[in-house]
Length: 186
Image (tube, rainbow, N blue to C red; front, side, top):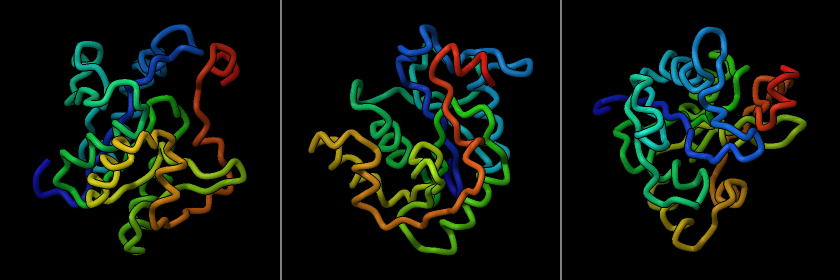
């Protein structure tokens, strides 16, 4: 990952309890949902690594980074990505957003680079989406501090950052798939 101004990461460490099975491995257009998101992230960021259990996802062909703080939620994945990256700007995306578009991800990178903020985060009528955002690597220590202070909610972490909000008129690409009903309805 050295020398890149951009890098991409896919969060896949959740328990999928509402889905009843590993939602990252749900079939989507001839591949798994995780493989699709990782491919999309790589196409925009130039690289993609999976933040999750290596024993579960190593066969997908992407680097897999184990969670250093199990049970702390996505903030642990954000910390892992930012502490290991050599890139200034890092796209971090949840694995359960099957309708993401490359245009939206590119827009996040462009907004981050031109703003100088800590992070570029999509903003829609549904609110902010910290699990599809671009973070600067300088935030690694702040993510570690949040974990040590037991600030596990991503929105609480965002509240400590300087944000570049990226307006998104149609929030459909940001929709997470969490239940069998949501999966069936898509």
